[in-house]
Length: 210
Image (cartoon, rainbow, N blue to C red):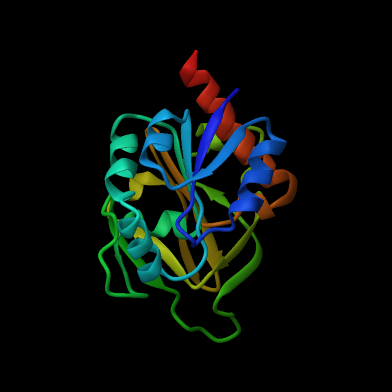
C-alpha cells in the first residue's frame, strides 16, 4: 500500500486529486498534519485559486517547515497547479513571499491579440526532460488540461521538465529536480494522459521503497 498525504489548506480540488490517485492504486489521505506528512510515503500538494491566500494558509497551518523538511529528506513530492506556484520565491499575482523552495518567480501571461487569459483547456506538452519517470509511456506533444493566468519562471532552466506554448509565449509547464516534481496542468482532469502521469508518480514511490 502506497500512502500519499494530500495536503489540505483550503485551496485545492482535493477530492478530484484523491480519485485520480485511487484509480492508479495509491491510498491518499487528506491532511494538514505535519505528522501525517512525515509518516506518508509521498506528498501531493494540489491547489486552485490565488497565490497570497494559499501561502498564508500554508503558514497559518504550520505546514511550511514540514513541507520543506519532507522535500529535503528526499520524500517523493508532486505539486499541482497552484501547488507548483507557491514553491517559488514570489508571484506577480500578490505580495506574499512564496515558500522559496525553487528559486524563481511566478509571472502573468502577457496580453496578445487572439489569445485568452486565463490559458484554459487542452494543450500540448513539450518535454525538456523526455526521459523523466513522470513521462513514462507518453509521447512528446501529449495533451493535458490547463487552467491558469500565471506561469512559473525558474532561475535554473535545467529544472524545467516540460513546457507549453500559449500564443507566442512558451512557458514552463512542469519542473523536476530529484524527488521534487510539480506540474502547472491538472493531471486529475487530463483523462488517460493524466492518469498515466499519476501512475508514473506512484510507481516511482514504490520503486524508491524497494
